Length: 334
Image 1: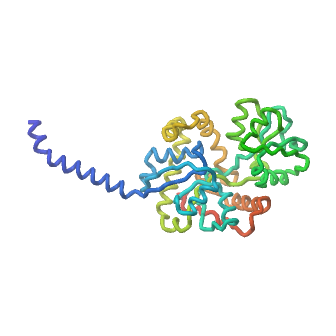
Image 2 (image 1 turned 180 degrees about the vertical axis):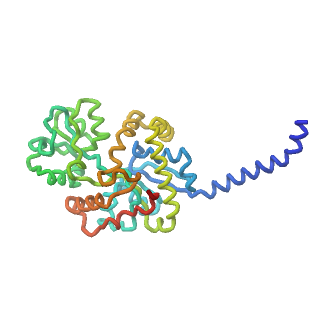
């Protein structure tokens, strides 16, 4: 009886399976192929992207995503501007400078992922550096580019620090942490996380002095696209950002799962370092002005401060407005 029924229904089952396969193939073909370029090699800050991909949120939004590592915000901006990638992750401050210095006015930021700059003064425990003024009379270890970008000068100006009383020791090739550990310099200028964490693994450090806590904040990692692409793919961008917010919520709810998903996507990563980044990065996702707002929402006051600092200390030509660099209308409604 069972064999008879199976033979009787076999044609119908075959037809149903064929139809399902055809629908799946058609659905896959309907997905928009999106290559996204990160600012740097993937890290904890990028976990919401990998979570959203693994959970199928991008697919639900009609997106088949390919997440590609980058080698700096400038390279990502150039790649997105050239049309090689429709979406990129880059510092909003770097996008602003590109707009004003190289004419990249065709780019726009649609979400800010790291809004509180982790840049800080890092020193060893017992250095005596507990306030900005304490760096006077001390030795700063930094590479030339880091010093010339103007932000250490902004930090000094905002806190009445006389930089002429700071001995600048130029250390190229990323050797500043080694110099600090060896006692060749008294402090370095880097990210509290992970740079400060890496130093702390070797020797105890004083609490890093975050620039953002002392009046100098440049908005960091942000979602950047071309304006012409955005004009044609507005609904897709809304879906992308909604999926990203879902991914972020899942990372916050289950960091262990987020770590496992990240390591599956990037198995060569330092698992302990990624776990640490997952723990500390939420502290940099909002400023006082954007606290309580959805992930990615940027306050106009923070953009104005970023523009003002870049104009005053990084020789960015004036004229850029918040509306010229950021459009938050594609984020899901609160």
